Image (cartoon, rainbow, N blue to C red; front, side, top):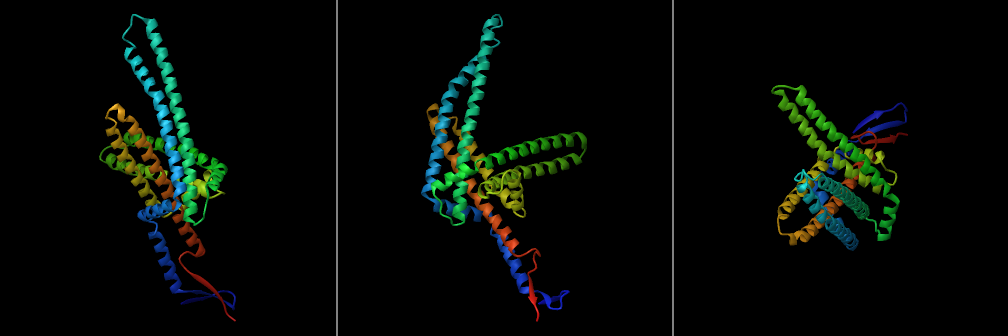
Amino acid sequence: MLKLNLSSPHMSLTISKNQIDKHVENSSKSQSSIGVFSIIHKSLKISIRNGTIVVSIFLSVFLSYCLLAYCINLELSPLLKDLIWRLSLIGKYHESNEFNEFLQSGILNDVRRFVVLLLVKWLFSYVIMLFFLMATISLSSDAYTGKKVSAKDVFSRIKRRWKSPVTISIYMALISFSLIDLFWITIVLIIIIVRGPLLVGVLTIAIILGVFGYLYVPVIWMLSLVVSIVEDDSCGLKAIDRASELMKGKKITGCVMVLLTSCVIFGITFVILRICNLATQASLVILISRAFISCLLNYLMFVTFTVFYHECKNIDDEAAAEGDLGSYALVASTEP
């Protein structure tokens, strides 16, 4: 026990060694409890707890994706065939300028329709994903904190807060594109400026930093989306700043989660591309399988990052509860 007298003769400051040890032990336990597998385990428990409402939302999103993809494919298939046919013919008939002009105008029309269909697909996909994101995060957050929520409450929150994740996505997309440009500009400058054996070492460092940025930016993106939905007073850059604060000391855990997700996505994409070599009659099966896997992976990612948010927040709340003096437990005692 260490005792320090302050300026007042009736006031002393006591530092308890047992309290210090207890605080350090609690801090280490908090840091170790935020492991990736612990987050996945809690995410699965939350999914089971939500039960029927999760299945209903998942099926509605899955069927919407399948219907959207099927309708777009119905329009794209003949359009692409016509575009390929026109491209194969152009230039073969030099003597007929009118025919070439006919082909070129047809190609331009096909390209316009193709771009419009892609934009329509992207827009509807984003709307579906936004609903899926907000519904899943709302349900998972309430389940983590032990709140009982109905479908009416979920739709009310979506109606009230849908602008926040849209704003976050715009900001983070701009940040991502800026970082990509900065990375490639840096690589080009290194190649131009650095010479000799030092070039390999500097390029290696730049690539490692680029890989870390590739993993770190999606973590901040997802965490800021969770913050913008769960915390009513956080939106835009404030939510991104809040996510950065929560990530202090937990960057490795977040990056590992993104790395695992990326590996699964790349693996499944590779398998799907190999399967696409099957006969045409199997294309519908591939479309449905791809939509189901995409919805499932997105659902798991939304739930795990919601749990990750609460785990980070719990650690920050525990640290704040210990007071502003950090690792020392200070007890003020009054002497008669």
